[in-house]
Length: 373
Image 1 (cartoon, rainbow, N blue to C red):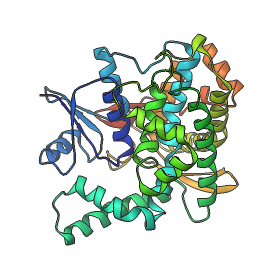
Image 2 (image 1 turned 30 degrees about the vertical axis):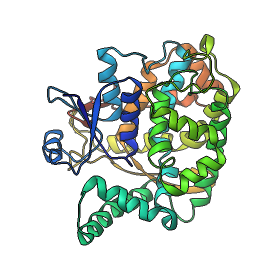
Image 3 (image 1 turned 135 degrees about the vertical axis):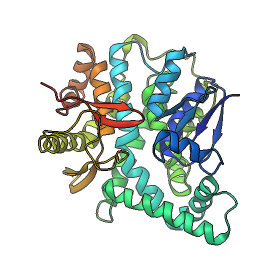
Image 4 (image 1 turned 45 degrees about the horizontal axis):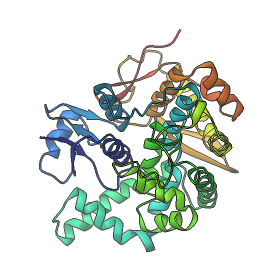
């Protein structure tokens, strides 16, 4: 029996785990929530959430980062964690930005272009959630799923007023990433790392697969589109590049530095606002018990909304402790060399932004740890 990855073809977070397993040559089967075994998985995990990796002994691992870390601990052909300090800092920056900072364009380009996307999405969702449904059930299943996702889109700051800014920001990011990938097959050179596996989530599942945005990517950013293909193949597919080595001497070419500066402008305002909101929220709950999420619903992922200025718009977005867990991981990986690089590229605040309680992952949930002194 091989491992089983529970997820969906169009799922952003499934894409990260899938790509990693493929690149590590891990034998696995992919299963959808429409399969008969899914109710038992959700019962064991405690909520409906993907991806989940089911091991041969029945062990369940939920969350793409947790899946990567489990496989890494078993020994892998090529670690996702760079060995050098500046590259490791960059990998963690894009682990945070890829999975969280690109949610605005991912949700906008999926749910705001119905003329191009809707027929594809309806079939894609229903085939994963309820294969073989009658037309009536199919409509109900898709209306329920798409309704929830459209509400989530709003929670990430996408609106008719911000749509132009979302598109301009994404086009700038695509251009910068395309310029970098024209010279390097992956973010840090000849092999994928944590940053690549985070970026592939939105850049494949939403932006490199749904009809409207994939055409945009192919037209605007050939090298990004080719990287998306490369990230879903077991071989390196170096396209003429000489080796799988990372950029020599812990180097940061200007194309990569430009991407880091973009992240500073595009994502730091949101992250800073979220940390400030969380600290106010925590201060209002002095009796909060460690090991809980502080909410009435244990599986809830957001503690509220924070307002901030983003590219000329005042927007509100959902504050999710999972991001603080990723931020803690980044800070734990920083060395003086990594901190210096962040300062040089406008990301210095990532070394000091923190909530008054750390976030831990316990039993597949993001929970607050003990208060910091």
